[in-house]
Image 1 (cartoon, rainbow, N blue to C red):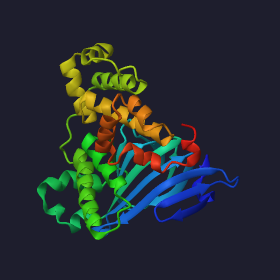
Image 2: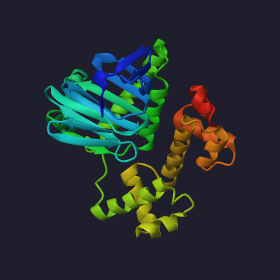
Image 3: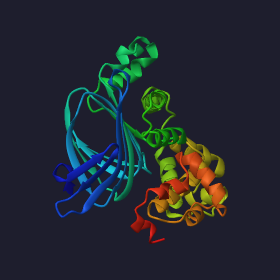
Image 4: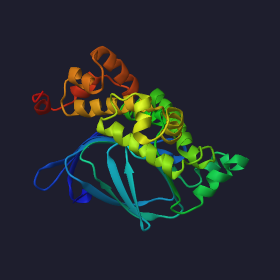
Length: 317
């Protein structure tokens, strides 16, 4: 695994490229960093990896909200190893009360999309939140060194994250104000699970059923299944399965399935597939309907994904 500190790099505004001593491209894409009121900061990355890489740094005291939209990373800190996978509990909230060395490995080759929201120590107090009685649960989490919580992103959180990622290049003050309002909404959704508002955790058998259904969805086997067939395949009934899936994943089964297929189509577009063929991957026979659904999901049209592909990639299609 390559160490990022030993790679050559080049950056132009938000675009970054890293390569190894053998002149092999390792990482390329967009990286965006922005600071808002009271040093609340947002770091976004939308990159392509050709080799696994790792980096080492030190976390400052405060709260980190990590959202993986695509890809997989592993973090090592304080004797803890934490994997964060976009399709399996891709949200990770961490509290540190003192500086903490850590290492991070990017494990999944191909596209990686990630947002990291950093909230410094004292941010909530400065905003007057500590005076509100209901804040005590969140305050208790913030006071624990290496306290953490991991869960799967709801559709609302994923859509908000993608909107922030897509709007990162807009530099005028109105867009900055809009981004700040969205960042605050992201923070609200990020601390909601530890603020006592999250629904009760499913029992082990229910979790196993949801995991089995996710396997069917991700393998493509469930593409043509009815809800009854899905329930039978995992040993449940339709009413219970829908309720438990909504509780665990934050969306309905078929909404998740549509989102997953659109994500697959997006990955294929990034590899040079035509819009017409990508529509079929997503289950749309009409490219216009596909474009509408794609724009609603990712904030941009399929053709805009292909616009920035290298000529060598497009030449293959």
